[in-house]
Length: 353
Length: 58
Image 1 (tube, rainbow over the protein chains, first blue to last red):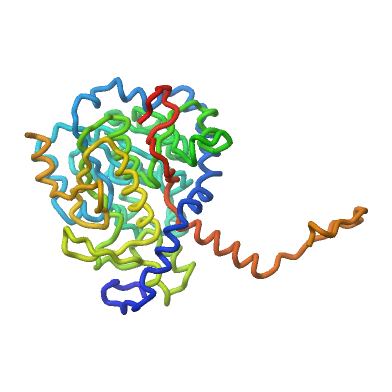
Image 2 (cartoon, rainbow over the protein chains, first blue to last red):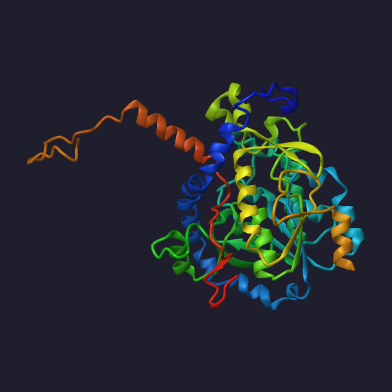
């Protein structure tokens, strides 16, 4: 059952039902998953935070000058279109905010982002986007995540060689990069960022209701006095929040913000395949993966519970944002009220006019 | 049950209560579900920022 989803029989009544139920529980489940490790990392990062600056210092940089931003995330659409060429040829003068997972792709394609964002507390995986100085063959045997992921195909290739190339790339360009690092980031990521000479701006992710005096958001804020940002569940959404709420952009375009998979993507290459397989077994995958028809593309995409939750969270946040949001991804499932749909050249042209 | 019946002595050996299979199964399922969770929390509130020191936070 690891073939192409479209080639598989689709249940009449159960398709995606379990996936939707899981998605509706992910607010609490994610909080349980990240609370302890997020707090532990915030404590472990205390010394670096105390000697660094907060994201509020971004408001004293030239990043505030323009009114537009383009968020580059690492969804599969980035690789299906000539995204890099379009951005470079447009002469886009707004701010480019990118996820850690899309950073190496940007740099390989000659795009220097104005701001990189990282937040995921995972102890081992995230550092790979920066080049992991401790990566070994044994690590690859233990965790095949990067051999399967669809965010950057380059990372699926000869992984040790790719890692060496990423290390060299980030070492060379690190001093030109600004990065907004969440206190929840793993010490391995923080160490690598500092080693590469990036300019760091610290922040806390919100964990729970900031009005709750006994909540974790307040606890972490008291610990380090950093501003707290509602990151929307994932680093792509966090980039968008940074663009409009911190950098105060009035118009924000999104690329690579698929929150889903193309129908020809094997389940094996989806983010949570192994976890889903372990949970329900091979015969019930169709109940977990959810299919959505994208009316703008006239095409069906499929997604997993986490990405569906990301989408719902994003659409909820979009209602409150004081910016115009244009999804220029060209695929995926992020469409709805508060999120305009346009092609990337159109958005870039709009910003340049 | 343990809320109703309370002993008035301390046993010499600690009593270990066996977890029933249903509890273990539910716990296993919750742990498995947590692994499907997102990268970080999402808070369903209107403000995007808290603790900036500004009165009007975004």
